[in-house]
Length: 445
Image 1 (cartoon, rainbow, N blue to C red):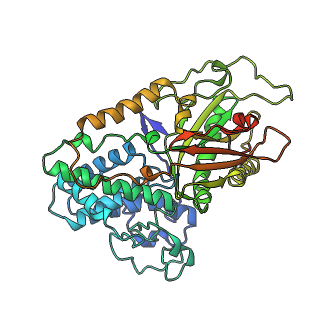
Image 2 (image 1 turned 90 degrees about the horizontal axis):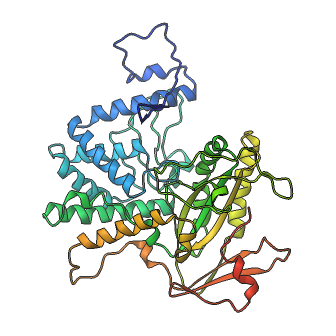
């Protein structure tokens, strides 16, 4: 629900009580007795929040620090529980733990200590605000000694209220790598801020995601109507983390970094059917064709499109990577889920394409590319002169110079394999001209 521009989650829980007094305290664990699992989860949203506030030494310092960390996380693209990053409650618990470790520190110091603590944290050692309560009402709790699945969690942050749960079970190897790297860079920036070498605005500068990688997977979600698109995008977004996990299993892929921003495209009928992403927040024209158009096969032609970008880092040079099966498995799983939940409508499509950095202008509007370049250029302008020591760079900047991505050409009846060769970031001319047009797609739809 959206109230006065603020997104609000409404939760419902049924308690075994005749009435709710004004002095009602949700911290009493016995209130959970005889409740079903759904009601317990709904109540735990409030119970966890109340417990966090009770466990921090200074609520005002905690709140101001949390606002800064949340803004930093959103600007740096690591705020999304759905896509495998950290959600709001996870960031709150990390800040609360920092406040516990430095109870007398002011918000500016707490922000610096936040990066100091968690850039050096020995994951998967769990983050706990207190020792788990010895309550036994039969609900499952996070305990790797008992639950085998809990042992595979990569970045456990445990909620303080019973039943204790890991709020970051969606985190994958790639998202953990990206988050830890941002912690490390945040520490370097706050070190300079504390020494007076730069201002706080430097911490909140958004990095240029599209300049980090040489290879991208673009996920295109399209529908015939805006109302259908909202549901379609929500379903696909909830499944992207599974695609990331699948890509991580590929022996040649070291990082699959998904940008949490979902970019809306201009209406497809206004751009000859080609998607073109707009800057976030840009209003999309609501002008729609009076009638749904169909192709020669009688299928509805989509008009509304959204897209996600996944940056890829490969571990070796001169490698051949075939992602056709992985992408096809993902698209089939999404269609199956849509059909089983009665969400699928005419005109809904999902497609994945391989895009090189030099081809991004085909998918990003000039205003969006200009904004990304401006942010990157401004960052270089304000950066102090580099020291004589070894340059500190992002892990993503170690992307290989020469990579071959293989995929089946689904536009023909042949099962031949198409190859894309990169030498020092520049495409090598394909000796077979028939393959030239098909190298931008790596998956079937």
